[in-house]
Length: 110
Length: 114
Image (cartoon, rainbow over all chains, first blue to last red; front, top):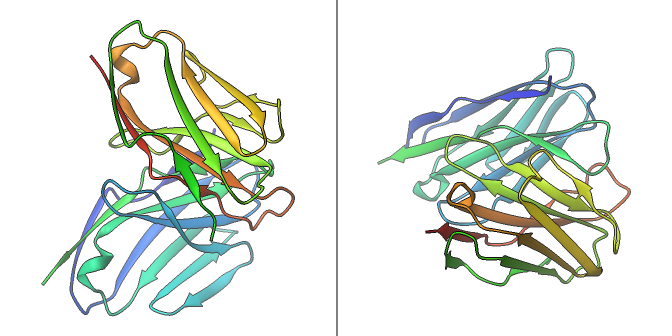
């Protein structure tokens, strides 16, 4: 079957670093996406990985290991506005559909 | 910037009513999607469309239908609303042909069925 696992909730401190993990088992793999979703708002695209390694975008980085079926999103210099849910999604062999994790709710404390 | 617009942010309907949720995108995207999002569950795909008048069932199509008469517009129809269809509904669109193209989402419609 197709499955994506993420922790349900994480807590971190303003100014710190947090790593949100995502593991997946899918029939095919055509890339992995990370989205951010603030409460009551639409998910917004953060990053895309299709090759192994680290992709850096400012304070956010995303890592992929295809052999391990594993990705993480790294958030540095945390700000209060980073409090949100972070969704991991895998594109399987279809060019259209994404398989979604349930999301990780990140709580930032002062 | 891509703009995906959903017709209502909040909607309250009664059991048995026929409900229409509308979605319009302005970036000439071929692909459009309807999801529902419930607490503790991931986004679940209801239907998607990769071209005008084309539609494909997603993971949970029962009780829903869709219509895509124009490229920019994708409608979700609840044929006879039931209380278990109370949910957040999200529409998305994406460009065809490139696996790195993200889906772009509307703000969502929070639908309550009484």
